[in-house]
Structures are given as structure tokens and as C-alpha cells.
Image (cartoon, helix red, strand yellow):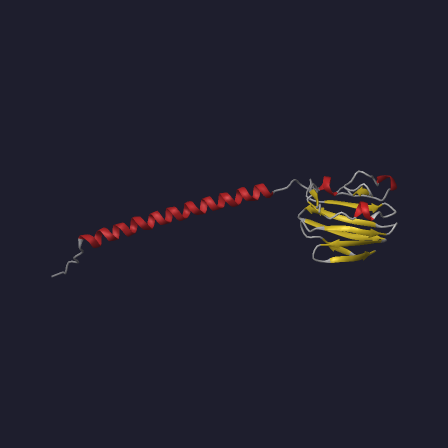
Length: 177
């Protein structure tokens, strides 16, 4: 005689419940995956920047303009802001002689993501919060972290600087005592 497997009603219900619960978890899991995939795709779309183009700039004296951030400086735009659709800016800065500390030595910061300065010729003495005074000569370079308070203290009559900033448009805040 064959033995019959006896299953209680509660065991049968439990098996059905487990099967249903497993399907629910699987459906929930695939739904979460779909939402996450859509979020990644949307995120990737929002980060897409317009295609950058090549920017070429040759030295011409007439390209130095007194239309920049500081009245005591002339700026030669290198075309990077236009080529990168505002991602970055690069220019050569000539600080006009003679240095007037009352005009140039104003503590300020820039709301930027990145800022780098390279001394092309001459020298410049700077102050940066946490760093103190530093004399930078031709061939010296430095970065300024976002929103670091800084100022120019003095400079030579022939100083020229290369400055690279991200993004191209930014806010400068002067610190008043």
C-alpha cells in the first residue's frame, strides 16, 4: 500500500504565500532596477555638455583689454570660455605698473570650482588664507581652492600671469572689515 503524503492546510497555505511573496519581491526588484536605470539615464543626459571646439590664440598686443575684473589689470582672453561653452576660462593678465597696495590689496574670494595661476614673467606677492604671504616668480604656479580668501600685496612692473578658472562665469566677493 502506498503512503499518502499528508499536508496540513496551514502548510499548503504557507507554500502558496511563499510563492506569491517571491513573485512580489521579484516584481518589486525589477521595478527598482527600472527606476534606477531611468535615473542613471536622466543623470547622464543632464551632465552632457555641448561639444567643445578647438581654440587657438596667438599673442597680439591689441588683444590686451582693460575690461576685466580689476581696474589695475589688462586681460587677454584665450578663447577657452567660448570653446568650452562656459566650462572654463583662461586668460593672460598684465598687472599695470606701478603697484598701488591701497588699490590692489583687497581681501576677496571667488565662487569657483577651480582656479590656477601661473607666473609667465615678473613676480607677484600674494596672501592666501591659511598659507600666508608667498612670493611667486616667473615659472611659479599655484591653485586657489574654492572660496579661499586671498589678495595681491605687491607685484613687479612687468608681471604677466596665466589664469585658468572653472567655470567661466563666477562671482567675486570682496571682504570688508
